[in-house]
Image 1 (cartoon, rainbow, N blue to C red):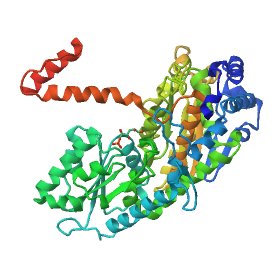
Image 2 (tube, protein in one colour; image 1 turned 30 degrees about the vertical axis):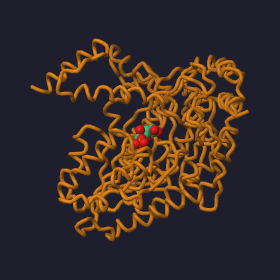
Image 3 (cartoon, rainbow, N blue to C red; image 1 turned 90 degrees about the horizontal axis):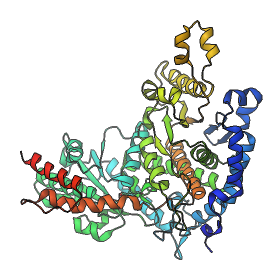
Image 4 (spheres, protein in one colour; image 1 turned 120 degrees about the horizontal axis):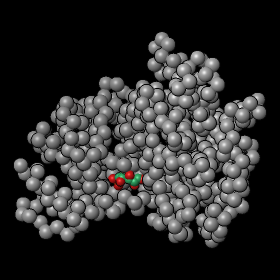
Length: 548
Ligand code: G6Q
């Protein structure tokens, strides 16, 4: 029996689920104002801490009873067993029959994690060592291009999991990066992406990292071939490719076929999912940017959060608490989205990164045993860095008709001390969660002397739940911890919803259809179209318009 077979009753029939449904009836209408007024210890009671991360979850619409019931639910869903199964290397990605071992990517050198009878940890460290040697060579100017010039520009070509992590981490850790080098990321098959990325670069000083687990992804291969053509045109010799291209992939054959020397290939494994791969060789561009030492510190952050997740009791476990709270709103309050609001400019791509991590993982409707769910799975994740969002969409969060739980992420120390900026930023950070929780009553608005007709417009209902993650400082280590925190939140959710969080069949259909349509767009003669009438008309219209 595998661990996922243990849940024989449907999720919504489980005692803890039923108890939560009942409990919601009493809690659903209670205001955070009264929850705080009734319990002076509330902030202490509903907070948890790990290393440099402090989580205040007291501004959630919960009581101690809610938390108890949510933890009961996690226990009934065998969360602890499932965590162990993942860390052990069981093939919990059942639709692809694969282990899920992104946690092995940050395991210490002496750890032992077996997949099909082989300890994978030495392989992980071999690749890390190879990356380290290469990154040092590039950073020190020892890796020379075809014309003997050192590399000043690194362009990562990849998409999805082979792009979003590297971009996010590059932006997040820019403060720690080598500032005399330029880093660019090309993902979109739209030729504009590549053209703009290289328009001011000297090919003689440019290194391309083609990052693709499969090395068959059409967008990445198209961009990689354009990069190859651009380089050869600029340097006038095909021989230049070997000094200007390296690959990150699991597919040696295709890498060779492309013309990249496999000595310059950095491997990873089928037990690393794309969206969980930024701490594998997929992070090579990051290692070149921030240096091997900082990359190692980032891995230590991941590892620290892994250890926390696997060992700390559920009620004090950050990813478990946040995962369960997201289920509370998603499944009992019918909240449809979650806003991720980092109050740090360096985290500007963090919401985009989390969109893939969360929604590609848990945007599923079939359970592990093949049934259609009768409950909601992943909410929609979205967000922007503060304070910009405050001047745009926060209006809807404060006074709109939708309930939007928010995660606020802020840092106590800034990396760029500049007068009052940081305290001002953080004043906004604290003010927003306070305003969202407590709002402003009719009486308060009236007491300000507001005209009667204007009063309703100026009332804030409040009672909008938020988590506050207050982190000491944005460092490679705390970034690693934050990413692993969300990886494990997603895992916790997936266990409760009983979905395979590690496959992504939903991206297949569009890819297949695009392959079919491509020749129809390119063909010189009028193609015979066999789509629906809408698609046929659009294709004909496009062919006509583009040729005019
Ligand atoms: C992530 C997905 C997907 C993948 C891209 C790129 O979990 O599998 O986003 O990362 O499709 O795939 P390749 O790395 O194989 O090019």
